[in-house]
Length: 351
Image 1 (tube, one colour):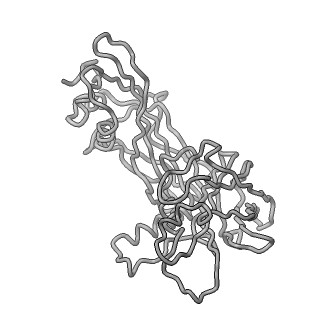
Image 2 (tube, helix red, strand yellow; image 1 turned 180 degrees about the vertical axis):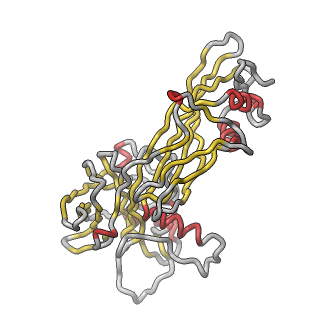
Image 3 (cartoon, helix red, strand yellow; image 1 turned 135 degrees about the horizontal axis):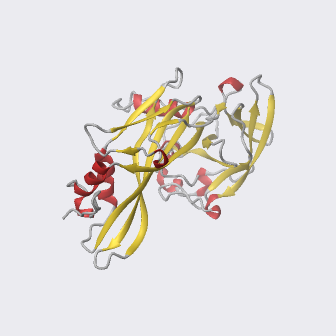
């Protein structure tokens, strides 16, 4: 939950599914659970957000700020059930309600109520060989759930295998170009279909007057988000490490000052893989780009009698990736980053 800098921007989908102004006054009342969760087999504490859609005649915005409108204040029962490959029920985890604000997991401010920040959580080590079904019920009556077929339930991602880049232990270094950009590649993961990459760029900042170290710091640079791959046939997924993305982000996030200069330290490449259901959601959103509002279809959801998404994710980091000498010179001498006063490979500073 704390890795909020990537994978994936679904909260807008969920929150804007949380209210509806066009409805049939004669229709029977029906609660619509709204679910968001990404399970990670490498984590032992798991969180799922469960809210409710609400119907309102008039301005929906004031009601969005009232917690009773978006949260279940009565008692609901939330379970995650694990099945083996033979469709036998093996595990059952009962989730309990917590306030994320009290756990260091605050909800972003916006139109919707953020106090309290209701989440449902459980502690367990999940089994990558099992599929998982979510059930939401109240007083023994089912409100919403994922598929009844274990073969169609949530599958976990085991790991990511990165081909390039490679960390500094091997002597591998990456260039910083656009036309001949260094390649990025990894194997398409079973049960995964969408990928993010954030590059954590570490640097040191020194005082020009006496060369004293002022701070060790880093900038997180999002390189790509929601990159879809063929999750059926597998194979190698490829992208590029282009200079402009890194340089532009550094120029945007670092303050220029003649009183300091900077030195590159290393980069960590933080890859994230998202599950098939998440890929289907992203694909449905991308397919509707340019479609007029009257033609647009509802976003993909795998929540029966509700809306939202429950899927899986996993993170893999390649740490201590270094720049070639030419890469250091580009970092220092590019018109984009020259004002940031990075040293080149000879120790000189752009002026």
